Image (tube, rainbow, N blue to C red; front, top):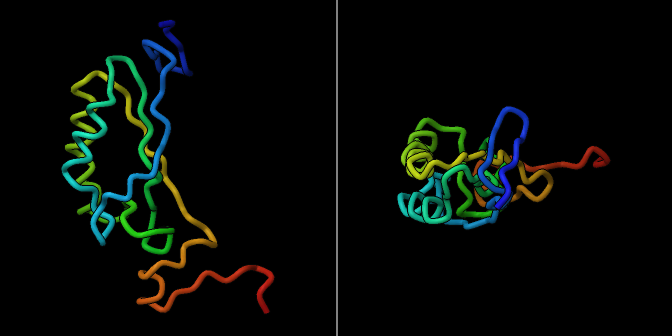
Length: 121
């Protein structure tokens, strides 16, 4: 496989794990320990992995089970996952996400927060 230089990052090859929605976080958006196994199984020395879409706020979630990165508990839960990937020698990018208009899950309904289009009157 051919090495690839991406800005200041050097990859050993051009095979990248693209973001794929797993929906395995708990109801609070906290990633679960088995995510470390999932991602580290796919990590290779000098490779690149991109996380599944990771919500930036409670109103950013588009569906249950998606992980977040807006609370200290969520950030702490990502640490062992990131460490497991780094132990394999891979790079790990977090795909931050907001579901936009689709973010009308139970969290929004419970908190009485609704996405309204700019064209709403």
